Image (cartoon, rainbow, N blue to C red; front, side):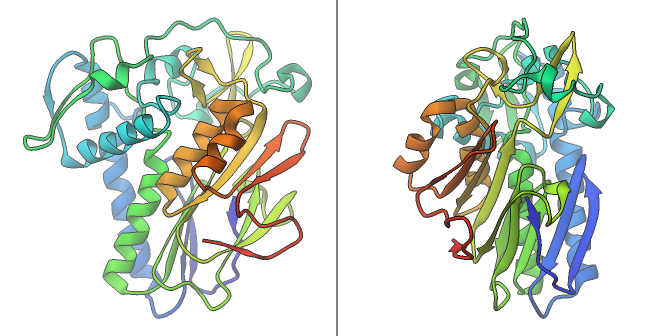
Length: 327
């Protein structure tokens, strides 16, 4: 998903292993806004990264079974992840760290082996069901948080990964921080997970929704107008790698403890904020065939794309060929 507006007040760079897009509607200082976003992202990286040995998250995973004092930011991030688990009945859970490691995702994904060809991968995006064993079912219910003392304990044998929520939450935090400081309309996109705050431009935030936010405005997809809230896309086609003779992706199905074999290759959802949109889009990939009903019951506008490229819209998502806004 790519923010496609041609606003002059736009900056693009790399952080947290993905692309960052910052756009200001009017009246803001871009250099100051970028410094605010960079500060937020650096704090989250130093606290919540699974790939930094000095992060608080890495310390918690290494001390599984023990109560550990951590940065308040990690407590807040884990709170967000546990809320996702509650809202999705465990379909989106932070206790997938061991399953991701067993699937080969034990370092920044850009360092992993390239995936197989589409013919090798098969329609579900995994060339064969991987044989993984990880203890993640209901493990999130046993996580202990002591908010007053900023301490956390995860069950022995459980490894946390906040990838399903932290990036979208970082977008929300960064957008709010810029708006609070500069009082201007702002859009922050991290890897295509988009958060907005304040008044949008006169024509709204122009967004191109596609499988891979890196593909640009001419890639197959749909252009929409976002007036407020957040928009997130989850896909099994982007973060993919080769491991143990199989092509893997990063969306873990807790029911199988392996990369999800979904009916959808991509799901995009609009919600009141980017975090909620991303929780729903990730859950929809895991829920597979039942996702449209699950999204409709929650009143969430969504765009789901099958492996054959067939698009299905849910709720108030604008029809193809229109420029109707999503709130």
